Amino acid sequence: MTLLPKWFAGVLNGFAPLFSARIWPQAQLLVVGALLFPGKRTVTAALRVLGLADDSRFGKYHRPLNRAHWSSFQGSRVLLSLLLTAFVPSGPLILGLDDTIERRTERRSAPKGSTVTRSDPVTDTL
Image 1: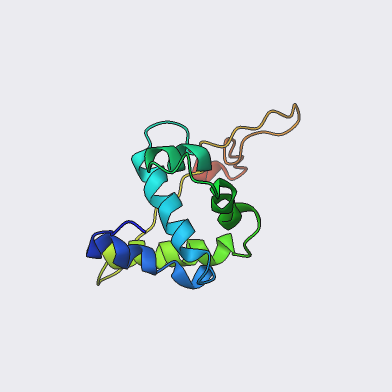
Image 2: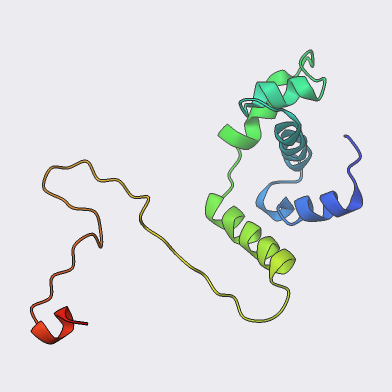
Protein backbone atom coordinates (compact mmCIF):
# COMPACT_ATOMS: atom_id res chain seq x y z
CA MET A 1 0.00 0.00 0.00
CA THR A 2 1.15 3.51 -0.75
CA LEU A 3 2.21 5.53 2.28
CA LEU A 4 -0.04 8.53 2.66
CA PRO A 5 0.76 11.77 4.49
CA LYS A 6 -0.37 11.61 8.12
CA TRP A 7 -2.92 14.42 7.75
CA PHE A 8 -4.50 12.75 4.71
CA ALA A 9 -4.49 9.30 6.31
CA GLY A 10 -6.20 10.87 9.34
CA VAL A 11 -8.97 12.22 7.14
CA LEU A 12 -9.42 8.91 5.34
CA ASN A 13 -9.39 6.95 8.59
CA GLY A 14 -12.69 8.59 9.50
CA PHE A 15 -14.24 6.45 6.76
CA ALA A 16 -12.53 3.20 7.82
CA PRO A 17 -15.42 1.93 9.99
CA LEU A 18 -17.65 1.91 6.88
CA PHE A 19 -15.58 -0.85 5.25
CA SER A 20 -14.32 -4.23 6.38
CA ALA A 21 -10.64 -4.56 7.25
CA ARG A 22 -10.07 -6.60 4.09
CA ILE A 23 -11.65 -4.02 1.76
CA TRP A 24 -10.32 -0.84 3.42
CA PRO A 25 -6.84 -0.81 1.76
CA GLN A 26 -8.47 -1.16 -1.66
CA ALA A 27 -10.91 1.66 -0.90
CA GLN A 28 -8.02 3.91 0.14
CA LEU A 29 -6.20 3.24 -3.13
CA LEU A 30 -9.33 4.05 -5.10
CA VAL A 31 -9.76 7.37 -3.30
CA VAL A 32 -6.14 8.36 -3.93
CA GLY A 33 -6.37 7.29 -7.58
CA ALA A 34 -9.61 9.21 -8.08
CA LEU A 35 -8.01 12.34 -6.64
CA LEU A 36 -4.96 12.03 -8.88
CA PHE A 37 -6.72 11.29 -12.15
CA PRO A 38 -7.80 14.44 -14.02
CA GLY A 39 -10.53 12.92 -16.21
CA LYS A 40 -13.55 10.71 -15.65
CA ARG A 41 -13.41 9.07 -12.23
CA THR A 42 -13.64 5.32 -12.80
CA VAL A 43 -12.05 2.38 -11.03
CA THR A 44 -9.97 1.61 -14.13
CA ALA A 45 -8.73 5.20 -14.42
CA ALA A 46 -7.85 5.32 -10.71
CA LEU A 47 -5.83 2.11 -11.01
CA ARG A 48 -4.07 3.26 -14.17
CA VAL A 49 -2.87 6.48 -12.57
CA LEU A 50 -1.51 4.45 -9.63
CA GLY A 51 0.34 2.08 -11.96
CA LEU A 52 -1.88 -0.90 -11.15
CA ALA A 53 -3.35 -1.42 -14.63
CA ASP A 54 -1.36 -4.65 -15.09
CA ASP A 55 -2.22 -6.10 -11.67
CA SER A 56 -3.27 -9.73 -12.05
CA ARG A 57 -6.08 -9.22 -9.50
CA PHE A 58 -7.50 -6.15 -11.20
CA GLY A 59 -11.11 -7.16 -10.47
CA LYS A 60 -10.67 -7.11 -6.69
CA TYR A 61 -10.56 -3.32 -6.76
CA HIS A 62 -14.16 -3.18 -7.99
CA ARG A 63 -15.41 -4.89 -4.82
CA PRO A 64 -15.58 -1.80 -2.58
CA LEU A 65 -18.12 -0.29 -4.94
CA ASN A 66 -20.22 -3.21 -6.14
CA ARG A 67 -20.05 -6.02 -3.56
CA ALA A 68 -19.00 -4.55 -0.25
CA HIS A 69 -21.79 -3.60 2.13
CA TRP A 70 -21.41 0.04 3.04
CA SER A 71 -23.87 2.81 3.63
CA SER A 72 -23.69 6.06 1.68
CA PHE A 73 -25.80 7.65 4.44
CA GLN A 74 -23.19 6.76 7.06
CA GLY A 75 -20.48 7.99 4.69
CA SER A 76 -22.24 11.33 4.30
CA ARG A 77 -22.47 11.65 8.11
CA VAL A 78 -18.72 11.05 8.41
CA LEU A 79 -18.06 13.60 5.67
CA LEU A 80 -20.33 16.18 7.30
CA SER A 81 -18.61 15.75 10.67
CA LEU A 82 -15.17 16.12 9.03
CA LEU A 83 -16.29 19.27 7.21
CA LEU A 84 -17.78 20.77 10.36
CA THR A 85 -14.61 20.03 12.31
CA ALA A 86 -12.46 21.61 9.61
CA PHE A 87 -14.50 24.72 8.85
CA VAL A 88 -16.56 25.35 11.97
CA PRO A 89 -14.47 24.24 14.95
CA SER A 90 -16.49 26.41 17.32
CA GLY A 91 -19.33 28.87 17.25
CA PRO A 92 -22.69 28.89 15.51
CA LEU A 93 -23.29 27.38 12.10
CA ILE A 94 -25.49 29.37 9.75
CA LEU A 95 -26.79 27.61 6.64
CA GLY A 96 -28.35 29.28 3.64
CA LEU A 97 -30.39 27.14 1.29
CA ASP A 98 -31.52 28.04 -2.20
CA ASP A 99 -33.92 25.99 -4.30
CA THR A 100 -33.86 28.17 -7.42
CA ILE A 101 -31.77 25.64 -9.36
CA GLU A 102 -34.74 23.28 -9.46
CA ARG A 103 -36.17 22.89 -12.94
CA ARG A 104 -39.63 21.55 -13.53
CA THR A 105 -40.63 20.44 -16.98
CA GLU A 106 -44.24 19.44 -16.40
CA ARG A 107 -46.76 21.66 -18.10
CA ARG A 108 -48.99 22.15 -15.06
CA SER A 109 -46.43 22.66 -12.33
CA ALA A 110 -44.74 25.95 -11.59
CA PRO A 111 -41.37 26.24 -9.89
CA LYS A 112 -41.52 26.40 -6.13
CA GLY A 113 -41.86 29.89 -4.76
CA SER A 114 -42.23 31.54 -8.15
CA THR A 115 -45.68 33.05 -7.56
CA VAL A 116 -46.96 34.76 -4.45
CA THR A 117 -50.64 35.56 -4.23
CA ARG A 118 -51.75 38.15 -1.69
CA SER A 119 -55.35 38.98 -1.13
CA ASP A 120 -54.77 41.54 1.62
CA PRO A 121 -54.65 45.06 0.07
CA VAL A 122 -52.55 46.37 2.97
CA THR A 123 -49.65 44.04 2.26
CA ASP A 124 -49.76 44.78 -1.49
CA THR A 125 -48.72 48.38 -0.84
CA LEU A 126 -45.73 47.39 1.31
